[in-house]
Image 1 (cartoon, helix red, strand yellow):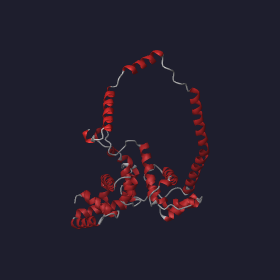
Image 2 (cartoon, one colour):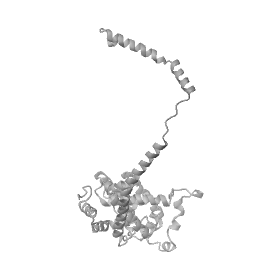
Image 3 (tube, chains in turn brown, purple):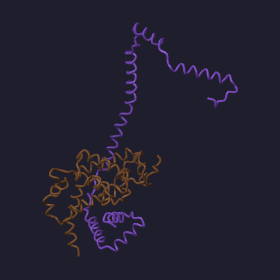
Image 4 (cartoon, chains in turn brown, purple):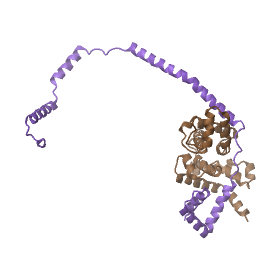
Length: 199
Length: 152
């Protein structure tokens, strides 16, 4: 069987080997990309079990729709499928729910959630900026959260993130800026601590 | 440079996507502004504070993915030999039912048929006269070799 010329040689060879019936080849591909893909999915999943389920689903969709794959980078293709999956799940779980949604009393949803986002134990451990970042990021709208984690975890450039989200680089950049603005507001006390602790 | 522009350039710097002109502009801004440098430090602190991601999927993830793919393929293969004969059978059934239920359109009642015939006879199309004139003109043109088309 011929290898697919649109993707990296090694990945194409492994895919071709899998199509010939070599299950080990699929194992190698999964192993190669498991960290960034699982990390990304786990930022959106409710628990590790759900992240595991989404991880498998992403791979199954990727392999079954390999005929429409036109990129050179298999990981980008996986992220794109993961993006679709996350958007589907977000729509099912929280239709029309946004941090910017106004609620009674002229406040916004984002104003009400933070207290619930961190457990009392987390609040007590206020010095742990990392936990604050993760908790605050979990409250961002899904598109902004995607940009944030694709940048922070996966280290993807904005050009690639824009491709995954099927948008422009400027929009991806703007989403990151919105995300940072919200995180900055959420993390203001922790930020101050961080700044003060610096020599 | 306003804070939004500065942040954009700092983000592009972090992702390695700065154009040369942007790089020069950012360097100038950072050199001139302590606020810009402080802003950059904040951004770096945030990036450094991001907690590490989850370790990875279940150890048997690859085997489970392979099993799901195999299962999906089997169900597709199981479906494939069935759908074509099923479609053919459905088409044959539809044809048979169509033949059995077919009835020719009934002839119009005598009164209606007579009315239609009368209407055909009595009605004259006003355009008919125009077409007749045009026809005569065309004959005249054909007969007269000296007739110039521009005369039309």
